[in-house]
View 1 (tube, rainbow, N blue to C red):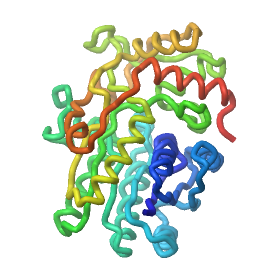
View 2 (spheres, helix red, strand yellow):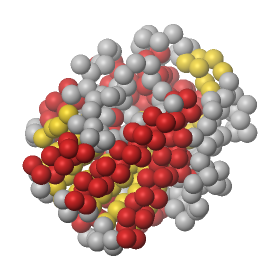
View 3 (tube, rainbow, N blue to C red):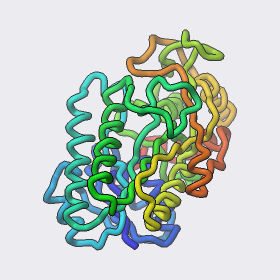
Length: 336
């Protein structure tokens, strides 16, 4: 079975490609490399000993999307491609709507035109907004505090409308919490271009001396230590959830949303201290102002994914930090 992975050279996408190849499926990757490099896919092939097919393509390019479907018999799509930084989205919201929402519509139209109606969408826990925690899939969504989160909500709504117009679609909305960690080989991990927007790659670059210190955004939240609390999940656990979701799609799953998280909340300071333990490096950090769009705390109730997908998170916070440090030390200048 051939699976198209949009954004397959990215952080989550590359780890998912590993799991798909190891599960015995053929993988086709479409990526414009806006926040990744082609060498990541070489490393995916090195890890698995298998090859994948790759296209340098943007999901907004209708002709490129059509070409991929015309040249390959794609049975399912896993859709990662999109801009993903909460803070950045508050500064350049139109770029997020144009890339994430418009690009997704182009992809879905191309899928429909070529008879491919199975999709796993990379959504986000941000769609829950200010709901009480833990977040459950039955809660209302859409009261979102950032343009990034709204793009995820809008795409979920588009897919919902698509399913209601044509129930032949099978759609899984995977609502991620906070993926961190790296493949235990150290060959792939979170390696953003430029200054990282996410906590863990920033921490690891401070630890290795590439950045001078970490700014913790907000120390006065109503949490146990004043810093934001998030549900951190190992990226390999997250990648495995996609394998489970694709299997469910092929059975005709309809439209379903699943929380993909650990079900535990860790503060920013918890992560800093766990990383210091894993790396043996004392981290320099300061407490700064709150970041626009950030919520004080959220974590998952992942029991639906456990029950219906047969998936659960298996790797703990210490493993997340160890694997991140292993990747950083083996790739001090990133992946080239």
